[in-house]
Image (cartoon, rainbow, N blue to C red; front, side):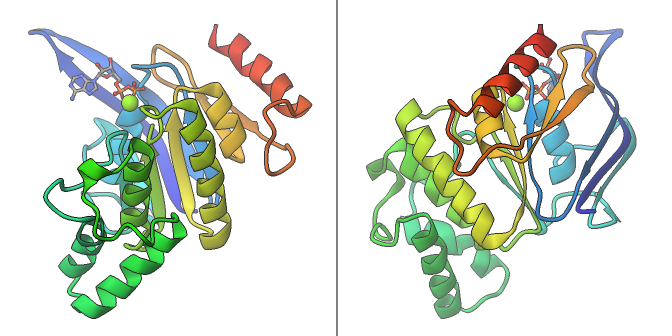
Length: 246
Ligand code: ADP
Ligand code: MG
């Protein structure tokens, strides 16, 4: 098992004597190579779960394991792609992608070769010298994905990475992400509040309810690939998810 949360609770202090119980008894298992979406309305605790897996925050109680190891802080076996890709604006595309590799003590030559491989995978092999401000939103997210992939993480954590993009760009990036997943076999946890996005992208969808934050249901998506949004399986599932979210 790649990722395992056991009876995880998370409480944030709120005001002087109050607290917010964001996650309640979360049990979550992700197998190696799975592409799982975590779907739920804004504020239900999705990012909180991702941050716990990333080691950016700690549970109030319960345990988080990645590769059987208890998560105690950030690690290179897990990388996050955020909604705003977080590229360094003063570095060109190639330098943004090699940055993390150089921190791992890789030689410059080897890092650049690896970065080129990653950039070609997201179809940006010809944009190495461009700076982030010269790129569209979709291209910036592609660089962010390449930068994560070259670190060769066990788990790719994606927190609404396409939420700020227009519909057309999002559809293209969905296809690219599926190709990447098929090529690399990475374990992916994809967070979204968009039902359609969760159903078209992943194999399994975990549905979170609003409050108290808990995983309410889990759907396995068995639709043809590449997924056509008008696929009757998806349309049926979408209706079910919508009724569960009410
Ligand atoms: P989602 O990603 O599903 O939109 P979050 O996990 O970001 O939701 O947040 C869940 C709830 O926890 C929200 O009500 C949010 O305001 C609250 N929250 C998140 N992080 C903190 C924090 N560091 N301190 C206090 N409250 C927080
Ligand atoms: Mg969030």
